[in-house]
Image (tube, rainbow, N blue to C red):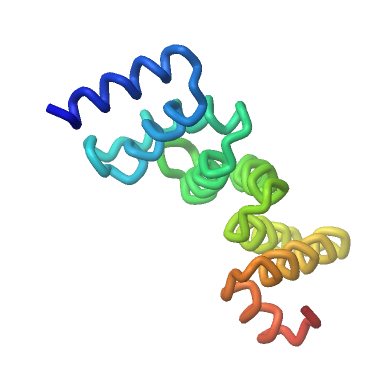
Length: 139
């Protein structure tokens, strides 16, 4: 009974525009914690929360667009969402933004990518530190 009441409360709060509630529902659909996993529904909730500045939603949106989950794959849109989350300090988003920037194969994008990798590594994200070490880039 408590779970049903909690879900009703989340839905009520989301209808009132509560960003945390909207993001929570979106993540629930994305991961399938208490609802059936549904990427298209997750996308709708996460877009709303991401547009309102929720960094977790922005990161998941980057992942969804980069992998084509619940939407058509679009690496430019994925980069946009990863950068929004990265600007808010999400180390995984910094790393993923850097990886997408590296795929652009121009000097400016590479410079930005290395900067994001450094910031991600400095935030404790091990994959970024490993990348910097592997490619002999000073962190």
